[in-house]
Image (cartoon, rainbow, N blue to C red; front, side):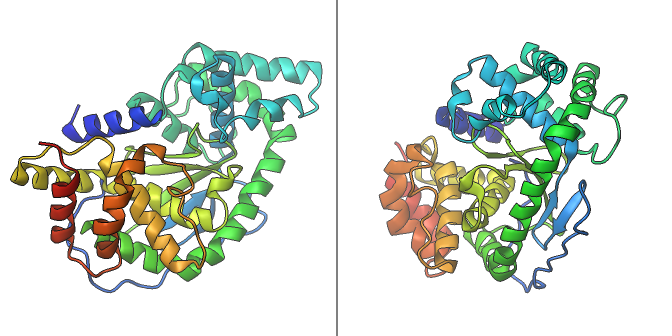
Length: 350
């Protein structure tokens, strides 16, 4: 396991609970973000595309994540009580299914509970690949025989699919479309500035193609996560209010920032070696929270970043030095090298 992966695992496991496009020099002009919504009647595949993001509404990804979070609830995992997923079992109970339909869903959930639901969607590379392969099914009529999808999961998905398509998917896809309609105007107004801000903050270059974002009703305990699949992809909940409206502006770029984790950790660790200091656990993720939040707050009057709302409680002790040292850099008043030097000197451990 690489130093970066170990660092990310230590940070995020400590949170209770990613992906490199490459570094480089920021700068240069960028074309304006173009919003290209897909046709309204489309119920699967690409729902909309901007310069920074490509939003997918995959039937199979939606079903897969539902089976996962409900199975974790039945396993009584600690994260099953988190706000982002706690409503999934309630939705199943209130769906008005017949006895036969409920038995079908329970059988599919049981398959997930035996194996896949015991795995972590962020840190388990095999689980990440499975989820990516399932998302790529898009509008395929069956999961059977799909490349990269374990046969046992494919069977569970196919078993639940008819009930899901009839009793859940129409409601979910309407929610995904509504989310997109709400978020697209916000991105059209602010995305270019956010993108340039992320580039300048970390000294990186946004990739030429947009980041794939799979919209699902329930993602995982956090409401969204990013995987180191190739290409990287973000999965985001459309039911968690943290990711709605202007919150989506911050959190989309927060998740996109995890594609630069290696570059951020390298900045910190290189400076730590120069100063003979150890980078404290959680600093990299605190930077990701703080930077996207500050950029969004600078664009949206009255916006309160997610970190200040308490979403990232473990970053609390970094708040004062980040505000004093890192914020002037994010605002463009202090050079990156100077900000990293002063931040490491302040919070690094000898």
